[in-house]
Figure 1 (cartoon, rainbow, N blue to C red):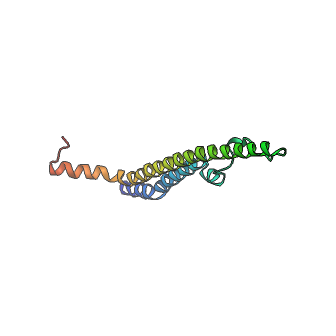
Figure 2: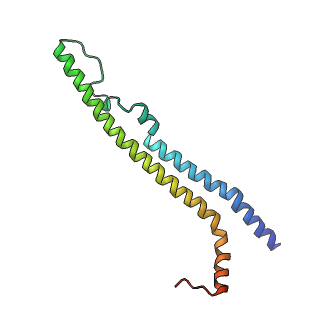
Figure 3: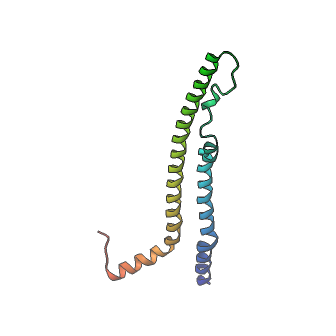
Length: 128
């Protein structure tokens, strides 16, 4: 009877339990990717910042030149701001991926730790 409980525990731990942890980590990765909207930032990388001076301008050449430089400056600011956000998003995604990988690996080791501790206690190893 007791062996069935232990077998059931390990079957769940390394089956459905492990799959739940992987799904949780994947959900966090998707959440970070969505939070930073990296795909949208890349698609609109050099779009005018907050659509400042984004429209076409009619009028004398001086007004058109000024509008051109306004758009150029706005696109430059947009490119810089989006570049920083893309970099921050990629760093956050990488950190989340590493932490998630450690979490999934640690999940697989947790049931073995009591056995490892008992084995180390039998051989007389002390952590201090």
